[in-house]
Length: 438
Image 1 (cartoon, one colour):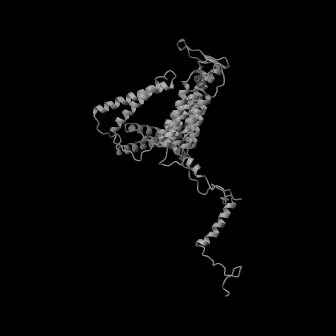
Image 2: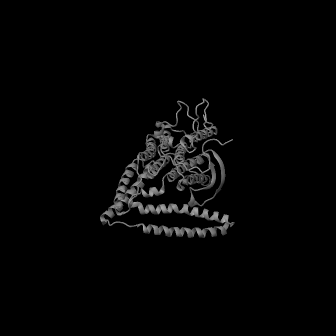
Image 3: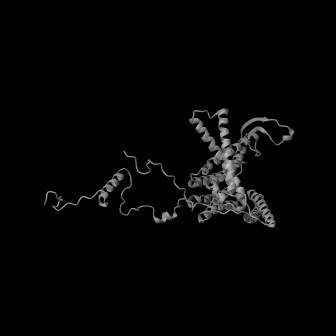
């Protein structure tokens, strides 16, 4: 054996040294790296018989991540939210109203995206709290029509002339009157929160694209009006931050004037640019339609909208429960016919229209089921009406009716069937798994 030949422990030739770039040479460093990560709290080797991840059945039941192709149709979110709002309008039970608010909040927290328009839910919650506070303040200052025996405080009463009989300012404040005002304010607050949930979950641009051709011009005007205030607020925040960075005052009358003028100038420039863009895209262009079709379209649309308003009013009031649903259905049919005829005037094409899939049907059906079940429960008898509208004279604690509560829980279905929002990418340099090295 020559002196330059390597030998192993058994006297035979040792394995030849591999090049570090070859596959065999990279195995040892990779094993070392895996061992080092395992010691730091990273992934550990799987043991025999242990599941390596979520099973196929659990993967099939889990809602997929939201993409452009499987996102829920915005109309489905609005139907779901309006169904919850209809249910809220049928009761003054604070327990059921709190359950409705909780259902809406849970769905928004589970399926809200990071888009700017999705942050409006907090503003609607603040508006609902303000409305509730104003309703209670009116009950304290202006009194309540509910007679009560439990006097909380007696305020100085302002004498009013004879022509203002029935109105008082100040006077006795009773617990029954405050509870009645609380129930009434909770109903309106729940309605506002349901509308806020629809605004936070439904993309306004996609909703505009889904409108019928007859409502496209009006829809564009509404969307532009709704996006004017957020853009204005963003401009004010940007200019105030710039002035603070330059060491200039951003408060007081001087700061308001120096910030307000650039904001108005930017709003005017944005309006001119928007008008030019709309004109370049043929906004307002329509096709030639016979006069008879135009008159029929106008009659069907106006009559249908009147029928929808009358039917909705009948459904929201206890006296119109008999005629509300038929008038609403007839108005919807007439309005849809008018919109279909009016769509013939629009020359607009639709690129990549939103599809109404199975998940959208489930989302819309859950909200409609909540509204339908509460309306049916309210019409079953006097006991059901008393459960949905607890009395305040005498002052008693409200009970939680089980069947309406179970119906409201159906509104949680979108939190499980709607696609989950895409996760925001983690910042670079931030450890998302494993423990910090000691």
